Amino acid sequence: MCYAVAVDPFRPLLRLLAPIRTAAWWPPVRAVLVLLHLVAVCAVACPAPVKSVDARAWKRPSVQLELRRWSERLGQVGIAATPEELQAFSSSVQTAWTAQRKEVVRPFHSYLRRIGAPQGWYMFTGPDREPQRFVLSATTASAPGTFAIVFELGSDVGRDTPLGRVFADGFVDDHRVRRALFQSSWSPNDNLLRRICRTFNARLRDATVDGRKSDVVDVRCSLVARAVEHPAQRGGARDDRVAREITINARGDEIESREGAAPTTTRAKKKPSAKKLKTAPKTPEGAR
Amino acid sequence: MIGFCKRQWQRFVATLSTVEDGAALALMRIAAGFALLVLVVPFVVSDAGAQIVGFVFVDDEFGGYRDLPGTEMMRVFGGPNPTTVSALLITSLIAGICMVLGVFGRAPVLVAAVATRVVFGQNPDVSGGGDALLGNVLFLLLLGDCTHTLSLDCWWRTRRLVDETVIPAWPRKLALVQLAIMYTATGLQKLVSTTWTPLDGFSALYQILQSPQWARFPWLIEAADGWLVVPMALGTLITIVWECSFWLVLVKRSWRWGYAVVGVGIHIGIIVLMEVGIFSWLSMALYPAMFPLAAAQLARWIGAWTDPLPSAPPRS
Image (tube, rainbow over all chains, first blue to last red; front, side, top):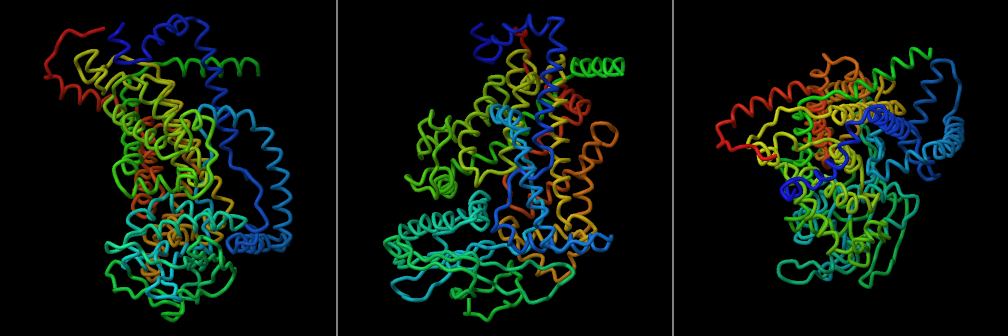
């Protein structure tokens, strides 16, 4: 017995349940339980909108472009619907559907949550046509008034600066950190970006650069939008646009917040890298 | 009609009552244990990992980026503070090692399921398909005797690494159905976007791989100067057809190898080109569920290879 518990703590329990597992009624009962589990899994995993899209998300270029494309395609098969009409239709159907679905799947959802087997398989449903990349920049006591990039998501810019090296250090490449930054770009308000910015602000101020405490003054967090290249429209101009930006001072107070402007941050001078094959920037060097 | 339903039900009950070699479930356990280690080890052993944990899994009171009220279970364990989170991650790491080695039966699977759920489930902002799949895989492993063979438990019990006696097959079958549901659901969900269809020239991967959030090399597409248009369109076509039709592995057993080969190719592509955590590793951890006979053959081969181990009378 002691041996059994040491090797497999489940074994005594399974031995206790052995009479049940050999009973004639067990196979059909087990089949019912498995069937109920499968019904729950199928009901919750069934592709469907799981939550209503908020007003800000409807305005995103990815969503608007998708609506335009569906409008064009439907027009080609004789169904006339403007993108606005499609949006209104989709929004109303989605709202009604989401409410109904929520009621239907509630018990299944609750069961699956309790057993720790969620079924949300919404992965890369559609590309973000205008992804917003997170850019962290800062002014320092040695270079006051000039925001230099410390870190830019999906780029090496800023990483070869002393502060950038200390800040990034394997931390920002993790998919969970990326996910948090991604969420801030889709968030209906600025709260998430503000929180991330405050945390990064503290991180930058606590950093030790070349054996000394960093001399960061103001910290700026920007979400810079840029359309992705579509295979049918290669080589077209794709300018950067600041979707949201927050600037925080040494005390952690927000001193500036803006939306929808051209970037003003200065890129730190960067050595050419063999790995980085980026073509010439679309905006003049130093204008970002 | 009633007769038909009755026959189908009896067939279903009979399908769930079959027994088989436990090798497929054991391979799933080993692969899931490795995937768990891939997930947890960086958090525990590296400075960068500790910083990530401090940023995303710890309440803002302790340096995290957001207010984490903590799930009920997290509060039981002491709340989302650095000590609790670290302790749970170390526990998960030990459980992962035990899963790979196959010791203490299903207990490490249960421990891993609880610990990872408490840690990774408290911040939905940073939780994705990988965490959902981890929960599912661990739940499925809990249902079967996953250390029956190819485990130190087995060696301790029989003085052999491989035990060819049979176990119930239904947990493995349930894992296969779960895999099919997952792939098919994610494929069908993609059809809402024109980019996964000929309506937009199968341009999804071409565009997704420019996303700074997920792509490892977001500059790659632009730098390739157009020569990736066709390969990416082909990749998009293969991915969507493969995902949407994956349920066919449930009815066409002979097609499983083909689906598995394409699946491994797609997942290797994801691992190389994208940064999405352990989703791909965990997906492939379920692949042995498609091949119980091949798994049994592999186990027999391992058994024959390890047979010269010093034998002793089996303890029961």
